[in-house]
Length: 536
Image 1 (tube, one colour):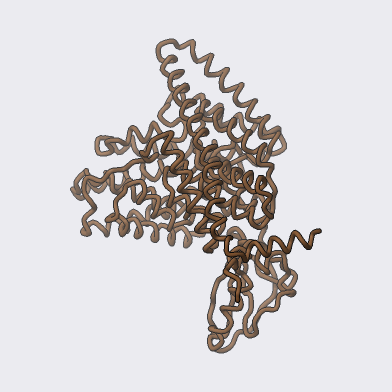
Image 2 (tube, one colour):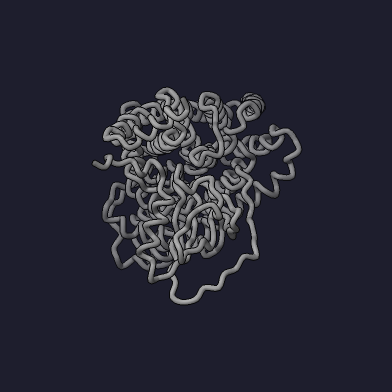
């Protein structure tokens, strides 16, 4: 029986209908994941409206603060209980989807969807500075897993449908289908294959269509340029890329330090104690600076006229938002950071553009342009997904002419962040989730003659996944130099086990490069990538 089932799966993968199946399955995942995320967004919006009404009541009747305190206490206890009931909902949710696609964890989709939905609503109602995009990616991914289980697909195809669900979740969260596709491919699956691209596009488009029918077609962050940035100001664009690279590196290092040092000291205490810290801070912020509450919609409203804001106000909003977001996320609260990250990118761009206006006399109407560039630059430096950052800025502005400036900022920010040595945000979180640590070895090799270096990604379901290096028939005149696993460099030995999404750096003879590369590509290729029309 197992052999018959395996034969059927192989036959399906190589059938002519496979690509067509991937389209309708991807669309089905988009409707499932997009539907959940649409309801999630409606719930969060209503929760934020209720919070604002409570804050307005507090201004008229100070005794209403008792109601706020009661809300925070009850919410904290319920969220802590839900995280204890389903631990995979802790944090953003994107690292969990990464691990699911890698085959390292197997999340119960129904428990995750229920817990994450309720947790996100309560956290928004309580004002914690967390975003909806990370949870939306996890909810969408679990929608893909639910569809896979309903259709009784194999584990390999289930990984692809989970990736499609992640694309649908990101698309529905940002109202940006291209961003959803690229984020799923560039950040989660890390592999470009026809089956993945087609099915992810179908998912993202279906999810965006669904959410558009319910919430309208207006982007979550809408930035409209009065005029495109003249090329004479592109030196300033380079400067913004440099600034975003430095601040993105500091963003990651600060969050990692707070999570792994400060909050780690509370590790032996019940989770509710850690969670109480941002809840307490939220109560203080609600009384002192309510504009910093929740993901950042209130700040986006304030930035409607960035040229009218004093520089110190922008600095205060940026610092306050970063600190509040860092404490909220580092506690392990089940929420994301992508929307606050975009808001901080807007603040960086507004600050940079306003400074230029004061110092160089550049027109204030260009501040909005720098806000869009700030989103792309900070996203690229923090997440290390520059292509997704470029497309996100395009979908938020709708301006093709801005692509050159956005690309410059993204590339510079990406390079600067890498040079400074900070880990990519989600890769670092994934490494912590899976307990990956650096492995050292004394293995050395003498390389003589002209050599070439190439990097490859181990595809999910490929012939390399789950095999030791010594058990693989590598091409002659080639050698594995390093393995990048979730941002951690591993010096390989013969007993090193390869995992899906590992990035391997291979050194080979330059004279044999054309013969060696196709062989390694074939070893790394996902089983889903090899689904082709059968040979006659």
